[in-house]
Length: 505
Image (cartoon, rainbow, N blue to C red):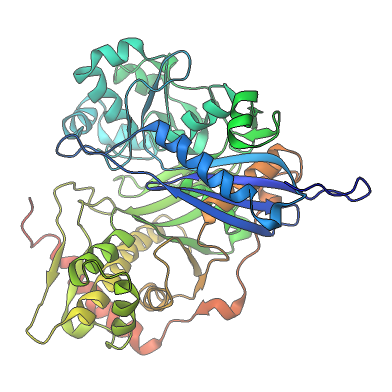
């Protein structure tokens, strides 16, 4: 990088690292909170059998090096001083490390579904009401605990050599700093966490026969985890010794990145995330737990705050599926389908879509649920199907939002972010959720939140709550249309009846 004259002060930059489901994202944030650039690099998910979803941790490192090389070459960073790294990443994973921090097998990621038997066994060992009361969550095949149990039973040689079981971003951070650590937000999505104590549950670990000593010590997300070690610094082209923050789970980090740091600051605004999966998340000042476990209760990346979250498994993944089905191999397919869908009246001419392409979480928690197009007629074409997909995802998120209202959350508006964001979908969400929906200041909200955590760890800002990004401008808001709100309320009632009527796998 170029050098500034000694008389000029170098701009201090925090880099947010987001280890996503398919891509590594880097976002550079300066002291004033301005984004100086975003870079990305992809990696693949492998499947060795039915339900398997694994990633090679070395490919994460390769992607980070590539994205970092592109970031540091950007003109906006010439003369800047990178002083901190913050991390976030996909939740519910399991990475098995030896004593040197080397992965003993590919990481099991959140979408790995092989541990259905173990997920069911958890609620036999620990009644659901007890599990939900402690962890804030019910047992689900996506979570970390059943993955650990599956490896213990099916790969005992791996468990025998395991020194640490960590989340994906924690494995990456160990490579950066050499330090073993975890954070409360990611830990709260494992089924091994005491939500109220903000620490591992010794009782849950004992009852599931998971060695508590294999779990990394926990800290709050904005805490410094250590310094970038020499070999990692050389590989990444960064100065050795810069501060690395503990970091946090991607959904709470996204909320921070869009300014939803604390319940009192959010003023009723909820995060709507349209990534591979979809979430509606609200920061709350104390744990809010659905007794039936239909919602996720999590620790926030902001100390002293929690989150309540509805999660569906196929949001942008549903749109991607439709594009592959309707415009295979067409690079412009998504844009053309969305343009055509925008001309279709609300309600998609009676067509309804259930987005259960990979099973479902909120509200059904049913891995056997399957997607469906209901009400097809000969007059329906790609435009109606595409709009029905967008509406179906919004109907699914609305179910979760209603459950959140039942816990006392009072949503007044939404802010939408994620790779699936487009203006048509934003308007559909406003109409179906019946509230104003703003477009987030960045679609890379998780990476921005990670960069904020890095700024706190480096002392650039005093706390994550004070370093949170401002809310989007009003001219980026979609208001609900009263006529469409009424139409969608009728369609939503029909949508919610369909789950119980359709056959399952």
